[in-house]
Amino acid sequence: MPDRRGGDPVIRAAGAVVWRPGALGPEVAVVHRPKYHDWSYPKGKCLPDEHVLAAVVREVREETGLGIMLGRPLTRSVYQVNGGTKEVSYWAAQCVRAPPFAPNQEVDRVDWLPVPQARQLLTYPRDVALLDELGSAPVRTVPFILLRHAAAGRKSSGSRGGRGGRGGRVAGAGDLTRPLDRRGAEDAQRLAGLLASYGRCRVLSSPAERCLATVRPYAAAVGAAVEVEPAFTVPPAGDGELSGQAAQRAAAAAASGVPTLVCAHRENLPVLTGAAFAVLGAAVPPLRPLRKSGFLVLQSAGGALVSSERHDVAG
Image 1 (cartoon, rainbow, N blue to C red):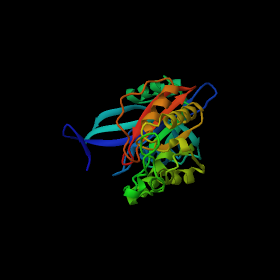
Image 2 (image 1 turned 90 degrees about the vertical axis):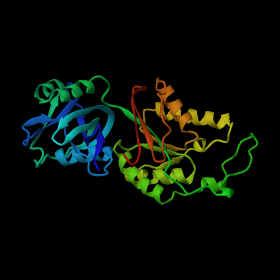
Image 3 (image 1 turned 45 degrees about the vertical axis):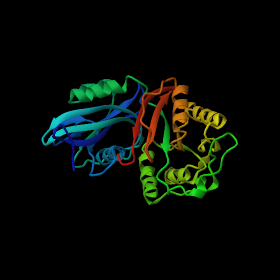
């Protein structure tokens, strides 16, 4: 069923301002659509139940043949079309693969242009505004992704651990080995494609099997090793030492300039999130806790936060 806002159907779509390095600065890909006789960006409707991240990668590939790596999100375009309201989610996206272009039903020409020339060619003011937004911040950014593990089987009474010496409960061996359930395993497979939209990341995970299993499909897809980080284990209640270690590890990873994915738990993700925002020079905005399989993407440049966005696996 289509989404509805105020009684009107909402048509979900996704697109990208695709860029590549040029002699005088970034060049962007603009496309000509013979059906509309216009110049715009590659974009298109989301398929039923398709995640918007999957949609943008697919649409760019289908219309231009280009392979992309998503950067920071840009302002969503909202406008009226026949049949309802169209909402197009946009990202700045670096071109990482450019095979020879083959004209298709949607697009008969792709031109790579410096920003001033692209501004003159684009048909719609909303697309010109996106071009100005692209130039308002760094185009080359580094992702730091915080992921909550997918759904796992219920804790058994034997997996809750005993009383810790610090006055809190310690995660027992049974809790660390608890596997993903069927839904969690399905989400992990879907996450592999969604997270790959941001390219190949270093993968850090809590030792818990439910975290490791959540990131294994992504790591296999991009050819990365899964690095176990003991500090990202669920801390016993009141264990400030372990929480402090986790914050230090997260801050170091966020500031490293290396694309990084961290998989952890509901209990310690707020600590990791706060550390990442702080080291990137930004205050943590009001955030709802991530759902299972949900993730937060921080894009930075030069050690400073450029953007943040969150996604649920269901889109």
